[in-house]
Amino acid sequence: MPTFSKLSKTDVSALVSVMLFGMTILISAVGPAEAQGPVVTSDGIYSPTVSYKA
Image (cartoon, rainbow, N blue to C red; front, side, top):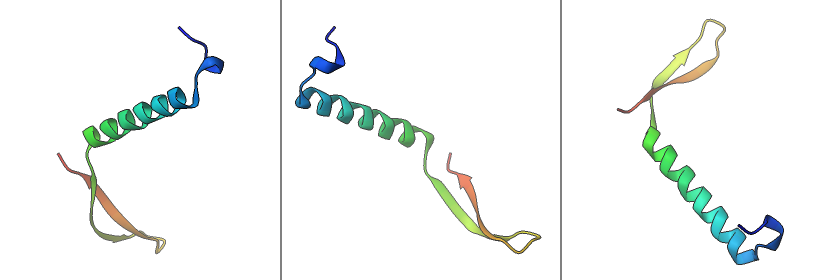
């Protein structure tokens, strides 16, 4: 197995692309969050509620 110092720019680019694609797949598997509406907390902070789509 080659060491990282011997990899060409093309090899490094390919590895980064594969890693980013894998992260995209993992994020997609979790699913998008959907805002349900505003919530004002007791100290007046405005915060949207979030639920996960199943």
